[in-house]
Image (cartoon, rainbow over all chains, first blue to last red; front, side):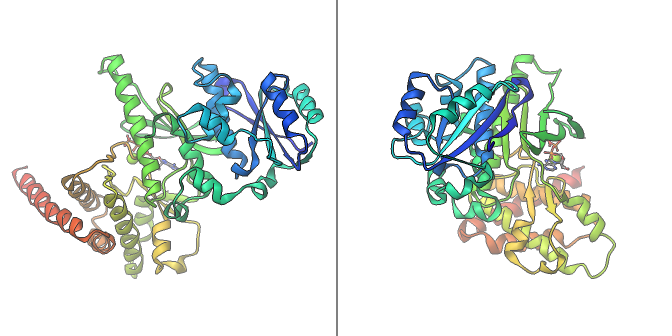
Length: 178
Length: 235
Ligand SMILES: Nc1ncnc2c1ncn2[C@@H]1O[C@H](COP(=O)(O)OP(=O)(O)OP(=O)(O)O)[C@@H](O)[C@H]1O
Ligand SMILES: [Mg+2]
């Protein structure tokens, strides 16, 4: 399968698994299942993700907040959306990175204990009408200019650092920037 | 973090290297100061960690290479950041490649050009590093030597680290002191390379975009230097 798994901070005991889908034809149906809680996972617009590591850093922060009982948003999955965004407004962050009915390419993110992801993955695969693609191809589906605009990244910065490194640095400091 | 390896222990922090989130990382953990009241110590440490992380981000925005940040965890008193690979502390690079060697003018010029431009960028954005020494700058050793004449190359080969004493809202005097700290540290760490500071200083002035602001820093720097001399004479 095309899923990709990373161990998060040891203290959380949790892992992050991602699955990339393209050419999805039933987004409204999927959104409904997320809203009702039938599907428990995080879905992000693939156009705003240039590297899986961008998600890993946000998911790690979300997992630590959950473990330490200080989630800023309702669930660990909305927390990922919140940390991906630079906005301090939760509702804005969720609409910015969360999926719309018009999206075709979606990154699905699960946070789970070791080897506990199988059933949810099956459920996700069964619900989404679309193609799975290896995570290594994620950059092909990103809108790089939109990403730069979203994170307010300047040219100067990109002379000395890669885009993903600038982004993860911002995510890591979200709690106390501005 | 698994399989942490202690790589350095400074006055304020322990530094560990290891894999974190699948990346080779460096963890800078500030230790507890037992002479301080525990609550005060915890608060001061949290503030220092946030200030250091913020300065790393701001310096990056200004076009200065700094390590990428992966997690800032004030409860664990730690910053998790990119471990800069294929790099050595500038002090070691100078000791190995310049000190006591002949035909090193190009290399000294290269370092002067890179550091001068980077410090000017930092100061132009009203930031100071606060502890400019060749131990707090990494030199990326990974590309070929033939490019020691290139300006953009000179600016991208150096990575600034250790922003523990940095400030974001610095005055002209702060900037002058920042330069003076560098001059003093070069004199003691690299007395065999006596032209290094003047080359850095030359390029600092050349690259400082706002010339009138640069003039103010220079004037202040002369005062700071004179004060420093007097202090040395008194002992
Ligand atoms: N991101 C990094 N990548 C590689 N090596 C690093 C990195 N950060 C630090 N080092 C190494 O660790 C040493 C110490 O780091 P640093 O200067 O941040 O700590 P320190 O001097 O103990 O801090 P402080 O001055 O706040 O007490 C550096 O001289 C360098 O050799
Ligand atoms: Mg240091």
